[in-house]
Image (cartoon, rainbow, N blue to C red; front, side, top):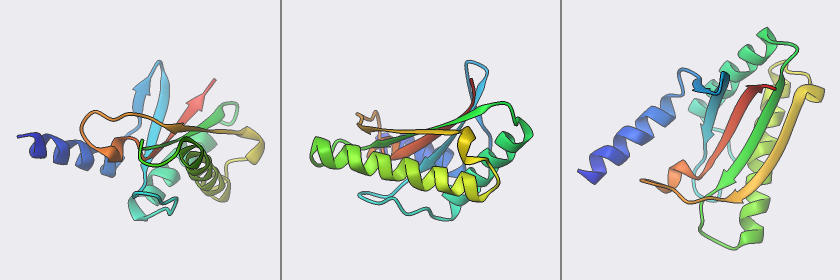
Length: 128
């Protein structure tokens, strides 16, 4: 049963089809493989959707926050989360979001509920 729940969560996250509401701020989530900051096809799709939304709201700041799973040292996870945020910010800029409108930060490691994939992410929020 736990495996089915984990699979459902991963599938929902990987689709990234629609922004998630967060206090009226759309949120887009990009997921990464273990110890990686490489952007795959589904991640590129999420970045493209977030960039389109950000371009449609030119007065809004685009907040990019990177995370890592708890495996490894604190320092390595902070660096990895910062790298993930930078890679996503670069993708947004390449897709037409002005770099001056992108705020980025790496938060390091965070715990997860069902799968470590939940922790290996970058959240993109467009808004205040």
